[in-house]
Image (cartoon, rainbow, N blue to C red; front, top):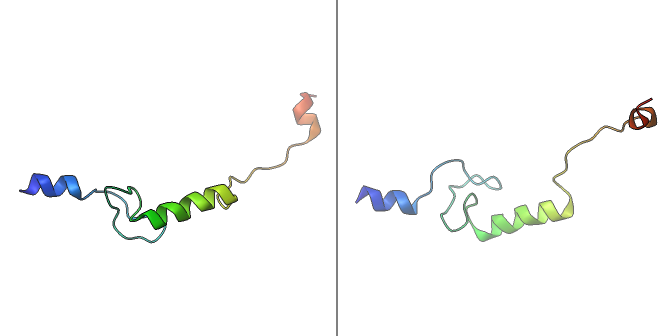
Length: 62
């Protein structure tokens, strides 16, 4: 039954935290632990988009 095996094993990228194959229950992560690590990184501010400071003149449009 290759079709049933395809449904239980997700395809695609490895876990972004540890690199192991993802599970269907925690996709795209391999486990709940890696999912929680990622959530903690978002909530603690580890993931941030760098921004450049703009001049006040740019904000005024002058």
